[in-house]
Image (cartoon, rainbow, N blue to C red; front, side, top):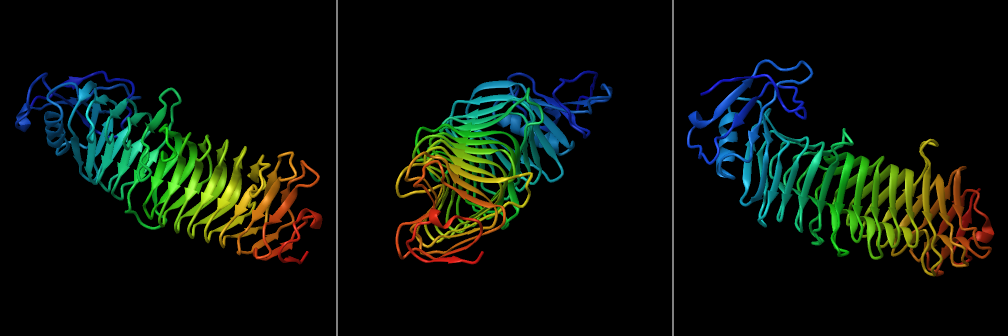
Length: 440
């Protein structure tokens, strides 16, 4: 086994652990550990910790790369992938043991339709820069280890960019604006997404954390999803942007949870929704922005729950919140420094900034709900639901005042659920259908 001293290293590798550099002789096929050249970093600039790499352009893809990694990771804690490879076909499987790490800075462009990179084991996969581009699944994570993407591009042309079918935690961030983070696809399969989170994961436990970067699905269909969560785990968004112009930014299915305290979740065109919260899913919004230019910013079905205590939910031409089913919504303002705004500019009949259908219920004790359209059809809250509406709070505001005949609350039927009001809502701004109970 060849040991060499190296005095320089590429500036993008900042790895706070001892590691090695593994290089493969061009066109050589590795058959045993003795064929691997192991280079030990012993004399580096103090600002750069020791690091290591496998050049993916050397050797035979994927077999010799996999074997080189398998042999090296038995001895060393961290292996870094560098280099460039275009037209790759076949799947590179990395079995990363617990306590070990693979770091990706390479540029990989696959030409096949299968999985490009498969992760197994319990160790950590870090991506600092570079690309993983695939016609099929770019990263298929079947491990319980962590995936940390903090720079670079992961992209699938029309499949899943990151397929997480295990309980591994994915963290997406962008520490350096000069090294942006982009997770993208043009996948229009409604059961998938640019990022797909499978049915595993503990209830309420984070399975995806996003505090920077961009996750987008540019598929031309309303079935495009940027993030689809089929897990019981939680998607926590504190920054960055999630965007699906024609589809759904986040599709939260089953028993999953979405927590938004910062960043932006958005869609753009008609028929889309920024967030779809279905079945028994829960969405908690305490900051950030959920927005769309048309249709629904937040669409609820089934028995789903939405709790908004800060931040903005808004649409230009549609419904900011559309609750169809037996949904439950709470709106409050827990911190005046992070105001709650639910807004639309909608002048169509039969809908409002908040639209309640089925048996959906609404509880408001803070925040501002407004429809700014200059139309007699403007409506802050529209309900044909048999569920109740409770409004209270000294700082609650429900406005639809751009037109003298606009209403703060409109119920389309005498069968609509009761309204209980303990807030400053003018009586003349409420339709007289159904029962209103004033307790202020």
